[in-house]
Image (cartoon, rainbow, N blue to C red; front, side, top):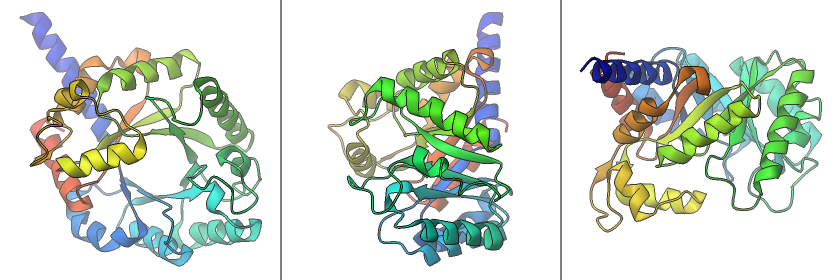
Length: 293
């Protein structure tokens, strides 16, 4: 009985740590949704702003300014291959710093097979020198617990080491933001590998916010996330029954039960609000209250 109580207490403690400084993702067009959800989101929460094709730099800048004005911490994404020139990048970064007071960014290569400008990938943008002098505290990079469909594992590890070292050279800490997933096993195993490789950066574990089952399956297919019948049953849904909605309750509980703070280090949750920001923010607020956080 005492062992069960100890296990429950450890799980609750891990859940609290991961939720304490959770982050959310939005796009430039989601500003009205964020304003609606603001009462459910703790002040100072980190809000990532995705860099989607078709959105203007002005719209992305406006989103970052509104995030700051609402009392949150904007973390704009930069898609390296979608940057057309050094001037375009410099102007955007300088305005983000001046108008939104950014302290952090997330840098990713992006989807275009051919770069639209001088930056081949996230590392080349980090090494460009453009991030120095902005008073940034941290820069986020991608993590792939289930691997990347186009990049082999050795290259992914090498890229992570190189990004860490390049950021360290300009005095900026690295944060790792993972692709979302439904299965806790590859996530926890991958975190252990990150630590075994000597990387002690904060890892933000990507989890899908509550959404309709069809929506979750659609985003999973688009992002190459595993959705076998076994995996989805562990998440709490069946791929043969696509009616209704699901949330990450079971996933977060399973993650917390397997997390060892000594072995797995500094972790937090990052919510991809596929069902909407307000719905996700309310869910997180309710979940935290139920678990005493």
